[in-house]
Amino acid sequence: MQLVQYVLTFGKLLKQDQRGVTAIEYGILAAGVAVLIGSLVASDGTFSQTLRSVFQNILNQLPQAESK
Image (cartoon, rainbow, N blue to C red; front, side, top):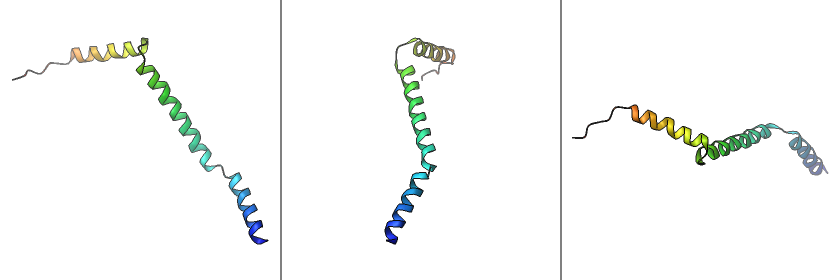
């Protein structure tokens, strides 16, 4: 009988434990942000073209190394 009571008490305590919930929520949020950033950068939309243009302008302004 004590074992049954112990298992029931442990089950109630486990059900009330909320420590892992926050980590799961942050994981889901991080995955959503990663998908959003990936879709913005991977597509050939305005954002992606603008980003490529900015980096190309930076590359064009860097001094070119002379090859020997």
